Image (cartoon, rainbow, N blue to C red; front, side):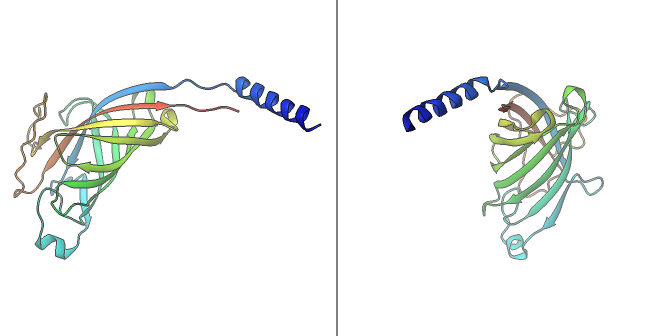
Length: 198
């Protein structure tokens, strides 16, 4: 009695697995520019916490223990006057004593085009180098259950006054002793999502 029941159970499970439709992975490539502005007026990124001991020993770009929140504009081109595609909200924390690594959480919402109202989340350690990779860990709307990666490249530092900041290969002009005005990043994001429908 046990053997036929076992065979029947395996057969039912096999048929159920074959009958379950899978949505094929869909790859989406998105290129956008993120403007992270630290100006006194109209700041999009604000320092909300910092340890006073860390300030005395601050080095690098983001002082150890500094916590920033941001609501940045994402655009189609490198200029702040380019077509707005949406916004990126999140936070970053200075996690390295040398001031060149942050822990970053970004929720990127697209507000135009076919992905209007959809967002994806990037979360990872972000060493402040010319090019780095952040994983996509989820999303909503068209990016529900998304996974993938975003390639981040700093295009311009201290470029708030420029209406057409330089583009091309990595261009970073950073004076660690000067206050930060603006960072502009290029994100190239590849997302794929798959859902099993039962």
